[in-house]
Structures are given as C-alpha cells and as structure tokens.
Length: 297
Length: 315
Image (cartoon, rainbow over all chains, first blue to last red):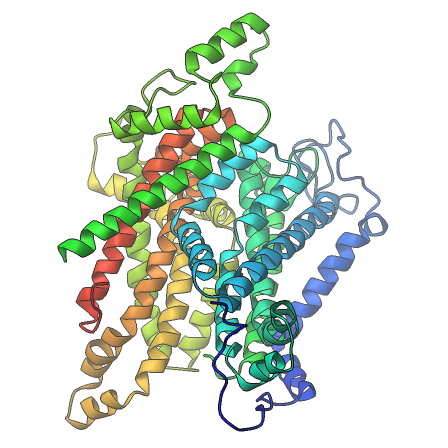
C-alpha cells in the first residue's frame, strides 16, 4: 500500500512550523567558515579560468612543437612543456574544462537518478520499496570500479560515455539519503493535511516530500562532484577515460609518470589541480551540511 | 545460526549472479568485439570462423547460460589473449592482490580507529584539527597521484624504497625485501579509507562519550583508559564496522589503480589489461573472483556484529 496515499492521520494539532534558524542566519554560518569561503572562491576561480582559458593563455593545448619537449618553466611556458612540446599550463586550463564538466554533469545524472529511486521507494512501500533498495545494496556491495573499466573499454571512452558510466554507478548514496528523508516526513501532519486537501501522490512527493530533502541532496551532490572528478582522473590515468590529444587532469598524469626522472614537475601540477578542486568541493559539502543540519556531528 | 548462514549463502549467490549478468550484458552490448577479432590480417570468413569457435555467434542468453554452466562445473574458460586458462592466471595473481588488500585494510582500520579515538577524546585540540586536515587531504587526493608523488620522494630522490614490483628479482627472498616493496602501495591503497574510518570513528565516539553508562563507569572508579577503550570504543565500534564493510568494495576497486602505479603483479593489472583487450572470459573471471572476495568479507563483517553487539539477533 502506498505510504503517500494511506499515511495514518495524526490527531489534532496544527502542522508544525519547520524548525531551525531563518535563512539569513544559516547563510551567515556558511560564510563564517574560512575553509568554506576559501573553497568557494577557489572553485569560482577555477571555473572562470577554465571558461576563459583562451584569454588567459595564448598557447593551444594540443599544439605539438618538435624540439620543445620537456622544457623547464619559463616566461614563455609558465609551467614548462610536456613530452610532446605542448604547453603544460594551457593543457592544465583546458583540462580543467573537461574534468569539471565531467564532474558536474555526472553528478547531475547520479543525483537525478538517486532522487527518483529514493523518493519512489520512500513514498511507496512494499515491493516498490524493497526492489530498488536491494538493488542499491547490491550496487554498494560490488567492486564497481572493475565494472566501470570493462564498460568504458567496451562502449568507448567518449566524454558522454564517461559521464554516463560515472553517473549511473554513483546514485546509491543519494537514493539512500532521499529515501530516509522521505520516510522521515511522509507521516508528518503537513503531508497528511496536503493529502486531506486532495493532493495526488505525484504532487505530494514533488511539493511536500522532496523540498525537505533538498539540503541533504545538496550535500551529497557537492561531495559527489569531488568523487566524480576523482573517478574521471583515475579512469583517464588507466587509459579508459578521456583520450589524447584532449587534455584531462587524469590523462596528463598518466603520461607524466613516464617522465618522473626527466621532469618530476609535470606530475605535480595536474595532481595539485585535482587535489585542490576535490578538497574544495569536500569542504563546501561539509560546510553546507553543518549549516543546514546543526544537530549532526 | 545454521539457517542464517544458509540464507546468507543464498543471498550471496543471487548477488553474484546479478553481478555476472550485469557485467556480461555491459561488455557484450557494446559495438565491436574482442581485440583478437580486430586483427587487420583476418578475412571476413576467418573472423566468422573464430567467432563460431568461441561461441560468439550464439544469442546472448545462450552464451551467458553456457558460461554459467561452466562456472558451476568450476571452469572459467580460456583467456583470448594468452590462450591460457582464466582460472590459472587468476590463481597465480590472487595472492599478491590479497596481500596488498589485507595490508591496506589492516592499516586503514588500525590507524583509522586509533586516530579517530584520539581526535574524539581530545576534541578541538591541536591534534584533532591536524588529523581533521589530514583526513580531508586523504579523502580528496587522487590515489594514483599520491603514489607517483611517494615514488618521486622515497624512490627516485631518497632511494629508500623500491618503486615497483612485489619483490626484488634475482635477490634471495626475504621478509624485509617484501615489506619494503609493500610499504608504498599499502599506504597509497589505505589512505582514502583510513581518512574515512578516522572521521566515522571520531563522530561515533563523540556520540558515545556523552552516554550515561560512561558516567557510571567513571563513577565506579574505572580509569580513563578503561573507560575510553573498553566501554566507549566497544559501543562505538558498531557503526565503524559498517563503514569498514562499505570500504571493502572500494578498497578492492582501488587496488586496480594502485597495482598499475606500482607495477604490482596482482589481479588489478589483469583486470585493466583484459578490459582494454575486451578479453570476455578474463573480464568475467576477474569480476567474479573479485566479487566473491567482497561478498565473503561482507559476510564476515555481518558475523562480527554478533560478537560486538549481543543485542543483534540473527534475522
């Protein structure tokens, strides 16, 4: 029986007002966290730098210059050149585009899927709840990375495929979080009131059950972007991710490892870019969680 | 107990079949075929013949059932690439992978729990802030990059530790040599999980530390050490075990990357190579064996709840 259609009506009493401080106070709490502020600024800078890459560097990221291989940093090449004489700084900037786009779009895929699965299994009980949750358990219990490898090698490593493969394999956390939020609110008075006023299951889920779940969804998406960027870089490092000559932070590292004696610095920059970006998304996600749910440790 | 174990084995088999169907569909659904069928010198007729001899001309469900039937009889087929039995190749490489995974798991659990307890007991101290910083670093750093950096520092610069392989070729086997080879890969593999386990232990301990039974324990004169490690940690361990259980599949996934960075002669490399070559029997075999390892460890963690928490009943 559907939980949204037949929740037990509670006794008398007004619908409780949502607890917690008002929005401006919450936002102030976010901006008081120095790590969160620094991270937000860093992510904003990184996104603008990636978007404005052609205006920041005059070098093309995939222009191979013979005789210019593995040069040290100079005024001409700020971070030196790679094994094919390509400008490392330009590749880093253009690589940021690929890595960020994959990270963000993959999370959009996984959060949408996780929200639908979580909301449906939370709002409707019985088999509609049990089957998706068993699937979630199964997906969490298997070493997915091996499957990602095999899948990408099989279907081809285009950017769209990478996004899909990462997105379709990382929805489980969101699904669990959304389900538990929906289960928490589904029998509250205001939801019962909405049903009593004649709202259908679709409207109840979309207008009354999902909005309270938004903060948790926001947290898991922010943390998810970092994880997706890490996944992309690992796949590219192994050769099944973004394919050369397109630069991504992961495939730049894959080539750099062959030259750690000649140019150890080549291995440094893309790694620091990944580390700082993922770190920022993790700090932001953590700060958002502290801001929105003050009772969790 | 007996009924519980039987039900769990049933669940595990269903899970393994689910994983194998998923893998099978994924690798077969894509256009193209195994790399050996893409050799330019083969004619159309030769390719058709090769497909027939490999059974690739059959409908997918038939191919899957045939594979399943062979597995039930203990056969994993032959690798397309080397022409050798898949099972033999895996058995050759499984010990090295298990050695790495076990060391990584041990390292992340022991150090992670210890760090988490110290952080929680000395909340908001310098130590706590420092470990929080390190934990965030550990959760954000790309595994393979950390590996490359450690190689640059400890191998190519300081010449302290070897950068590749599981042992020195040609040298007499010794425990010291193996441990030296194991050090960097194990640290790299453990980092992300160590960080997460430390965070969970900290928050799990913080919740327990305010509980009334701890006040009782202190009131009856138990020492601080006994209270923390005997009373508090024991109760904080249950959520930690859950995190460890969830960490195992990721640890096993991370092993593919770690083995690639350090040229570790384990199954991870086999997985990467077979995926790139689209060596179907090899991919299926590796995924099956790896999933079995994960399912088995999940089972063991579930059993450990029984030991840790007398309130847990078999369901």
